[in-house]
Structure formats: structure tokens, C-alpha cells
Image (cartoon, rainbow, N blue to C red; front, side, top):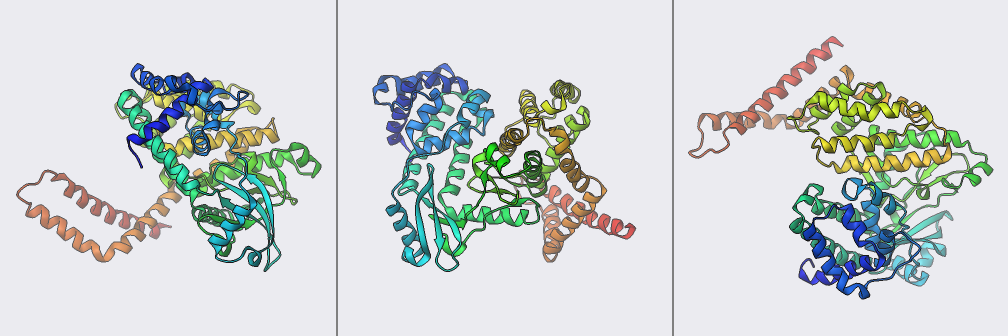
Amino acid sequence: MRGPHNIWRLIRTGATLERAGAMNVVLDAFEATPALRFVARALGLPFKFLGYRGDPTMPPATRALTALGPAYIKFGQVLSTRPDVVGDELAVQLRVLQDKLPPFSTEQARAAVEHELGLPLDQIFSEFSAPVAAASIAQVHRATLVDTGADVAVKVLRPGIEKAFRKDIDAFYLAARLVELFSPGSRRLRPMEVIEHFDGVVRGELDLRLESAAASEFAANTVKDEGFQLPAIMWNHSSRRVMTLEWADGVSMGDNAAIDAAGHDRVALSNRVLQLFLSHALRDGYFHADMHQGNLKVAPNGDIIAYDFGIMGHIDEYTRRVYAEILFGFIRRDYKRVARVHFEAGYVPADKDVDEFARALRAVGEPIFGMNATHISMARLLAYLFEVTERFGMETRTELILLQRTMVVVEGVARSLNPNMNIWEVASPIVTDYISKSIGPRAVVTDLANTAMVLARFGPRLPGLVEDALMRQTNPPQVDRRPRKRWFVLAGFVGAVTGVGALLVIDALL
């Protein structure tokens, strides 16, 4: 599908951006070069009359994307998580994009459910409501199971949505190539990687089995979290285009009046929502990356309920430790340590000056710590931090950008419940607990034990691999352009064996 035939889609896009007054906004956000500006205006301005008018009450960028349809709305939402790409101002505008569209008919939804689940709808659900929510990719119906009488939510993909998204994403790939061609400086923003990231997000949301799997994994990680619930997935009534899960009863996290009327403690809720997010990100490395008020409810018993698992964030163990050390260093105002962590992790090029970087970090931290504790923002701290690291040559790390964006959203939810919350006081126990478990002697023992387990699995193959490496070193081939690689392999085995020995010594001492 990718190719020159997508130019028509780009022309329609450019025409709509021009008509909505968003073209300059977008070009400025991407710091477009004169060449790229010329190409963009040439694709849009002469065909302005072909552009969609959109809602004139909206800001230009959101007006244009909303008019262009579901794929563009979703793309705008994903870009709102990437201020490193579109800039802070446009990212804020894009966050207000409402992922709401007119629903498709209940008859189409019923037919889709019957086709996907292979049974007449009346044999599965005794009741099946009109749509209760409709977004760009799917809509939700409330239903009652025949066999148990339980109330459930049934999420159904829009008819033909996969084909529609595929066409638009193909045009996005072409646009990214044009950006890289006519604006070499924009390659630092990795436009192709941005589109690939969006493509991956959409593919996950267009296969509801993957969203169901994400919900199941998230539930397994958080099953022991007090005051937190997730609706259970009904796997026998779910498929690629249909997902059935428990109906979540409760009041919206964004309705303070209803929360107060129900007798819930908003201060406790604000603390809990922030601590839960940090626990999921640091402890599990797997977090809900779309944790706004629209995806959160407060159950009658006061528990927080999360749903809609289309966008989830993942952070590996090493990155979590780096992130926690950075936060912990800022909490202790140890800027030299924060700087060293960045260098040790390879986030900042080794040719930069550590002391100069530490001073730049101090310029970020001290003004924030000079504020009243109730006005300190962790999200603002992370935003300033990324500005500094970008100046020192740190490459974009998508997982940290997603984490920062979610932190902004969660902090906003928490402060909407309790404007006077002390962000450090609430976050400190979670960060400190993670630091104590993941960094230090205890963590060293755990890491060595994990290394030993890996070696144990590969144990039967180790002698042969070592012998092969030694034989190759003794009898090198005639042409060997990478002789050092084998030494690295051998050094890795020696290091691993040494690690096992260290584990045995530590085990004997404990």
C-alpha cells in the first residue's frame, strides 16, 4: 500500500491543515526547514478548497486532525505523548483531542459479535444495549450474560476500521520519508520511528486479543495492590474484534462532586493514584499509559478501577533502576550522582563534561525545591530534565518519554482530587522502597542468582561454546575482519564463571 499513490492522501491532509489554519502551527512545531515548508505548502495551499472545514471552535491543530478522521485523531493522541517531537505547546493542544465519534448502529455491532463469537447473540447475552461510548476505533455496549446474569461491557471494533487505518498509516510513512528527505535536521526526531511506534500502538488496539492480554498481565501484576481493581476479561466471549469484560460500577474519577457525594476521601484517592502508578512503573515495569480521568472510576467501596488497556508502557529492569536513581538523586539534591547515573547508563555521550552536566541539573532542581512543597511538580521536573539532557546530546528514549507523559497525566489526576498534595511526600516511600530492593548488596545477590539461573539453562552448551571459541582463536580463518569479537565472547564466559563463583562466596557468607 505504501507508495506514490498515497500523495493524494497527503494533498488532502495538507489542504485540511491549510483550511483549518494549522499548517504553520505544525511546521513550526517540527522546526521545518525552508525546503520542507515549500513542499508542505505546495501540497496543501493550491488545494485548500479540498480540505475539510472542521469545527471552527477548536484550536487549529485539533480542528484539522478531528476533521481528517479516526487515524488522525489517534495519531494526534500518540503525538501528545511525544513533546520531544512536536514541542510542549502543540503536545498540550493535542492532549485535548477527544477520541469520540458518532456510534455505528447497534445492528452492525450485534452482527459483528455473532460473527466473531460464532453464536447467535441471544445465546450469549440476554440484554445488549445501544452504544454507551463510541471512540475512533471501537464502541462499547452494556450487556448481560445469559449463563451467569453478570453485567458486562462489550467492546466492538468499528466495521472496516482496519482497512481505513492501514491506508492512512501508509500515507504517514510516505510523509515521514518526505520529512527525512527535505529536512535532514529532523532526523534527530526520528520521524520513521515515530510512525513505526504509532503503527505498533494501532496494531495493538486493532486486535482486541492483544488488549485483553495486556489487561490480563496488568491484573496479574497488581492482584495484591490494595484499593485497586481491574475488570476481569471474559476470554470465552472475546476475540480479535470483540472484547468482553466485567462492567465497572463506580463514579468517574473526574467528577469531584459525585466522589464527595459518595463519601470518598479525595485526599486518600489522590495519594493512592500516584503511588499506584509509581509502583506499577518501578516495581513491575508495566504500567497503564493512558491513565486519565476518563479511564478511571471510584468503586462504591472506594477502590480505584482502571480500564481501557489499549496503550500500556513497558520499562526494562535496568532502565527502571536508572530512573529510580535519578528521582532519588533529585529528592536528595545529589546532582553529581544524578549526572553520573546519566553517564553510566550511556544516556549522555562520554565526551561531555560530568561537572558541567551536574551544574545544569542543579539549575533544573534548585528552583523547583525552592518552591512551596505543595507546588513542586515531578512532571515539571522530568520535563526540565529532558530539556537539559537533550542539550547534552541525549538521544530520545521512547519509553522514558511515555513515562514522563503518563506522569504528567497521573499527577494532573491526583492534583484535581487534592490541589494541595505534596508530591515528594507521597512519592518518596515508593521510590525509597524500590531503591532499597533494587540497588545495593541485596540487589547484587539477586542479580548474581539470576545470572546463575541463565548459566544453568545454558550449562550443557557452555563447554562446547568455550571450546569452539578457543579453537577458532587457535586456528583463525584466512580472512578475519573482527578478531576481537571472540575475545569478547571468551571474556563474557570468564566473567560469567567468575560471577557464579562470587555468588557461591556471598551465599556462604550470608
